[in-house]
Length: 160
Length: 199
Image (tube, rainbow over all chains, first blue to last red; front, side, top):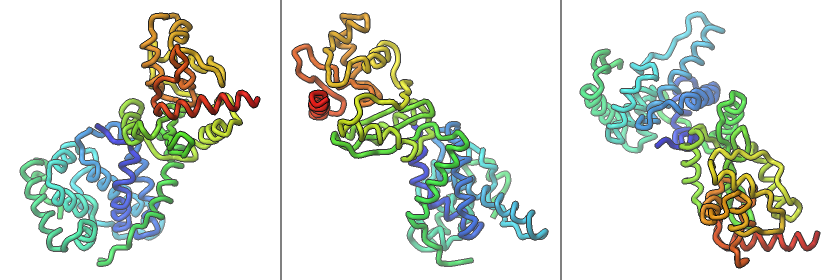
């Protein structure tokens, strides 16, 4: 059962903005936020009903934010430093959304925010509540499960 | 890295949301726009597609459930976009103020089909301030024995108020049931009787 897209924006708008800011800072983040939800809205009817919407969105946000950085880099400095790519996915990896959806809540969100969204653990902890160490541990536990449940992740190796 | 994340405020998200609605509209990605308005018969959910008003729902029908139904039956590309419903809200205001007898906004009847749809299509033939019985509507739809089916068609009218199913009453003249509640139907019939007499 797929929710109205409005629910998706209301539930995940703040998280997506955090991801965009972590890559871009507060000014350009707005633009990346709009582009994230616009491309999500475009693809939403085709997203499988059992997909983990938050992880899917966070990955799109990360990609859009990096796109904005690249555009800025092309226009300005020739040797701009690009953010390190943390996500082993092109955003269309439907197996990953299902594997993530099966994780316990705290593990799923820690993995999503840190490994897909690129948020530092300080910020993951701020969003989830709890300590930085707990966020780090939940993400590590989640990755360990994904190594078994999501074969492609194991093949490519943990990216970070 | 920073250790104190900047807070995300509701104000920022509201502004971003408005920008998203504008861009989605421009790109043709807003399949269902909705808003809620207050009215003398309680809060109303108004929804439209690019073709016209697709749904009007009373609070007793549970607006969250109605939105879920729209996502499944029309498109999941649903956004709250109040300005897209400004004209519908204005016409309803005028109707409740007794200043409007018929609605001019386009209507999208995709949520009703078959016999029910043909009943709904003919409801605007009942003039403002008048009523018709379920049996009369069945007869004029060419199926005089389909009285109960007419009742169902009215109950499931996706666009009440704009398409006046409240003007269909029992043969004994009592109002009968209404998706917005019996009291709402009574109030609408009284409004139209009062305005009709004054005209």
